[in-house]
View (cartoon, rainbow, N blue to C red):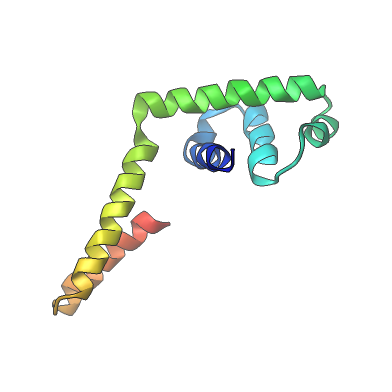
Length: 111
């Protein structure tokens, strides 16, 4: 369950702007603020079941975006490769400008 929540939270961070404002707000409350369905329903004024359905639809939308675009998976692969490159360059004497350029690139992927 935790891994699924973590994965959906990542997709929300990655594709959240593609959701409507209402869906994005509810998903943020659920995944990032860790509010319960009841707390969210009180906050936005719909039933607990309505919140659950909104979350399920939003999860399906985020999953479909990733299934089609695969941008989040690509980003994770690039970040893992960047970490490998950092490990490799630590082993070699490289000119400062090369080391700085590689570390700048890998640093961008870690954010």
